[in-house]
Image (cartoon, rainbow, N blue to C red):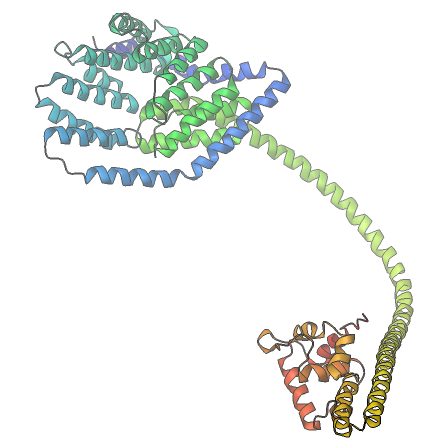
Length: 566
């Protein structure tokens, strides 16, 4: 007998009971989880909430990349569609690959390729291939919530001529249908659970045919335990299944999600969140719209009190279900949706009321502050009148202080310059005296020995040495301003700056270095450097045109170049 027919019969016989049970079913299970969480000690609730929040942050990062992964999925689908296939075997493989891609993103597209697969399989003599087509359609119908069609697809198929391994796969597909049925219809909580009864019957038929320690055996045990709300036992079977599955595969990720659901069932909320997020991340990376963990994550966020994230995830679960075109997922998501959104609305209402109270308090405070400001302004006016008088006197004193500082700076510069010049001149005089004495002694020897021919070369050599003891302009200026070239270039535009060899200054730099130490008349500068007056004016005009600043600011910054006495 078809399961869907029995469901409709039960529905028509007890419509009132169904309505009542459905209303309660939409909230009863999520309330139970909330009650379990609320019964925990406060410190444990805090730790769980923090762990859930950390995993939510990880999930949000994955969701930000969802569009990218969906684009990659479309590229994979396009490559499969463009893959040549001539033989029936190649076509079956191609349609199966497209079905595998679409069953996680589009019910309608997956349905097209499942039917194409079935059409070719129907023309083939291999019963296992036809059985595979029936299983594909049944699984797809379950994903979309079409349980009557899934029932027809898998129960109408005659598996008697199939191999034993395929018979097992057919019975497991029927078992999956009964498992989903037992959870989908709310009224079954209040009447004999036909789905669970059928599960047990199938389990007893399949189990003797399964090899010991096989994947299928532990898979059936996991679902049976979960259906009976034996969540810890279901988790244990799931952990065994993980050992038997390859990494990063849809089968493994589904088992991880199932383990997370089991852990949530017995209150291990933090671990449950981690594993459900892991399954959701895999679904996102595969470009899927069809993964159930997002709905359960929303319910868990609701349980730990993060209503904003709960609403975000439940809305996204509804959007994904709609995009996939699965009434099953839409109805599943709608079970927790009313509770989450109602609590969120209540929170918004509370926040709004608190905002009103806060606004009223701020208004009172504003009035008080206004009165205070008026009083302060009046007092400030009195203080300001006194301050203006004091400021006027301070300005006068500040002007005098600046004049005194300027005079002191000039005196200090003059003292420093004078001290340096005197020291260098005294040193030069001493050196020249030594050279003159040595020259006298050598000339005296030459005279006594009547070597008159070499006296002229000796006199020339000592004349050059004596001349070298007199200070050159660059040497004097760089003694006071060792970093003058760099600081002077900083006053000019980059393209107009001078390249200078170490120990030398350009003509322009010499002119403004002399100006800095007080030689400011063009005539004096021209005489000092043995340049014409027009040359001095031309160089000064060229530098001022290349300056980053106006004339007055340029000379002000030039005067800020410090004298360094080393």
